[in-house]
Image 1 (cartoon, rainbow, N blue to C red):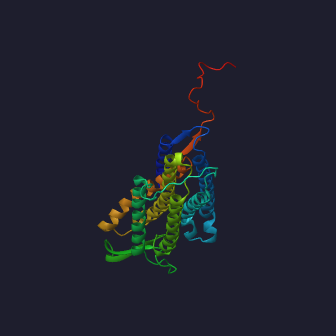
Image 2 (image 1 turned 90 degrees about the horizontal axis):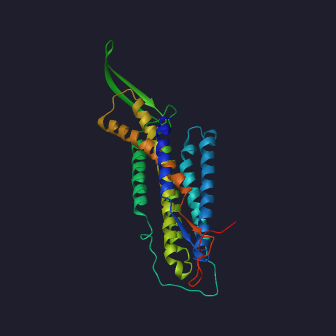
Length: 316
């Protein structure tokens, strides 16, 4: 609960930044008809996937414990959210086709994904993925069986202390749930599936047919937007998983009665920072996906050369 309280301001800040940086391109009524049709089609399917992902993630989060009281299904809620967005993106990109007119044109070009990837989002995704992999690795390495023998679900430590009446004695404690192999293995499998969906979505964006020749610049911009949304969806999934996992690590390390080593103390401090930041950032990026860049069509056609220009305001 404390993590969520700290994460909410970060999420609201991300929403405000997304609103301030939202890009809207305005085109004329009769301009770039093919690119506008593709933009509306892909955006519609992406929103459908986003809504579907939110619904499935909500069901896993609220009802997952009824099926699996240990929380493994609940832990997959962020992955379900990201998978929904990616599936909507894949369907939209694969089914998007520019209108076919009487005149057709083609251009010889070699499309590359590298020219479309926004570097900032790629760096954030890479850093988040590395932190998540490191956290799950630590969880698997430090995990212990719980009281029912389930491997990696508890964090147990023993130590020797000096008590006034008993002298030197051995004591220990165990705390869970702990993100060891019990949770890390299902999450690893889920993220492999998510990585495949990311690769398919990026391929679909690159391979989508071009609209008319005079819209190639706008079409390239649309592809950059789509690639950015794919990376954002993956980042939401990674950070949405990293936040709770780091919170579990922090809770178990802080509750242990034995004094922690220098490494354990450092991990606890990092987890204390990463948990609310990752959770808040995932909420902010998720809100930003609803405000993705878009194309706005001007309802009034632009005057042609030689047309009279109206002066003043119309009288009603």
